[in-house]
Length: 159
Image 1 (cartoon, rainbow, N blue to C red):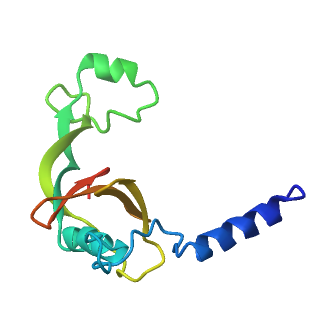
Image 2: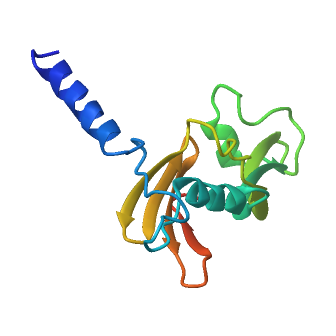
């Protein structure tokens, strides 16, 4: 660390504490005395947490199907080591080989359970007057307050 770096960090911490900040993008409490209603960090994180509980998303799974097919004369000629065409049976008498084909199917996958609301893994930054970016170890979400008091939540990943 360069000289003065620790001093700058301490000064920033003192100013943050002196200004009443929490270091997590704090916007105050739900009801400030005599002023407009501000939305608390906990309320925003709780909205994302509740949005994630039990959530699923569309995904795909791949299964592999093994088809046993007869080797042709060409297959047999190209398989000099005898590793692909096995045996002497099959339709043409040159053995059989396994042809693996993927089968892709659509499935609903379950999102992992979010960490507890009071966990230190949650982070939050105000991106506007009534919008935030919330993150944790699982991803990040853009949150916007609606006029009816609810939140619009957009995930930056599947969940």
